[in-house]
Length: 422
Image (cartoon, rainbow, N blue to C red; front, side, top):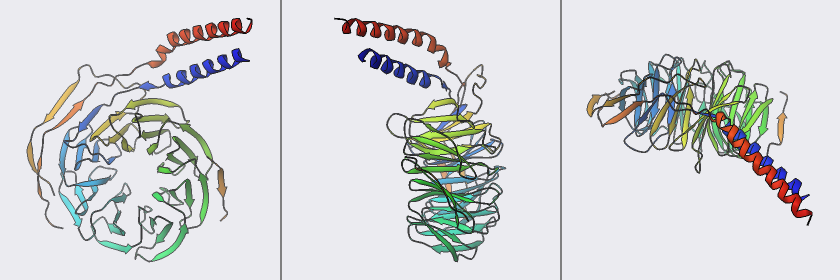
């Protein structure tokens, strides 16, 4: 029996190590490091040509990693599909900026703004500042504003007809005039999103993923093994991905069916999914496992990237060809989603000199029927580095590793049997 236990132990360790080695490690196409170790939010345009990030301030980059502008203190950004409009939650309120950094409109009545929700067409912008939620149209006209205790999340459908607000103990539905229409009681609502077709609202609520009809009725819920951190919905509305403190990511279909889940070894604090659900991105944070993961829509791990800090935000371009991540050490990283991107012949480095710019357990699924002018900001030295994308074909290292482990396996088995015979 001791021999069998030894065999089982070594074989289990071998299989576990083999699984870990199966992923390809990649490097980003480019990175940008801010002057201060801060990183909160990132968003990409549909074609990947424009990247907005909230670091020590709000920044905008082109797809090559060149900084277009930077200014204003803030922690959250959203961008339209064409990359021409950027909504930024700042210390001075909600600012909506153009691609050149000019202020299109600004509302400073509620500040700071910590949460921003904007659909790719930019028709409506929903925000939360303190205990107050607001809804503006794309011209900056205030449509609705109301205060609710403990507001933590906000979401709007493409037509802006409902404002869903998450609080510490419920999800509330408001109409465009700011009047409450319905209430669903659930705890610790960290994130809310409407499906692109507006047929359901999904939320990361305490230990459960919940999906509600726009009328507020529960469609389905799924309880995970720990606190939900983040959720994302594919733009075709067919898939929902969730990340949890139980170290797992979960992929559901729109009806709440669990398609697969994967253990990434540490907190899954941010997630993203491509429009058709063919790729899933995950960022981890805690301990030493500060990584970006890329999975296929079938749950296969395609590649990983070892980041220097906790991964706080992640986003795909609309076409799914690019992935951006932001970490709490003040770095934005930009990736190709191909498993083995081409390696540039010569790495290039672009330096932006100092300048002054004028900028304006799972228990299973439960189913229930149913504006001042922009200021002048001094921009300090920043470095944008275009890196060669190198891959480590770690699978190639499995053969020597396998041989060594098998040798240990048989040696251990022989010695254990010999010991029993004495």
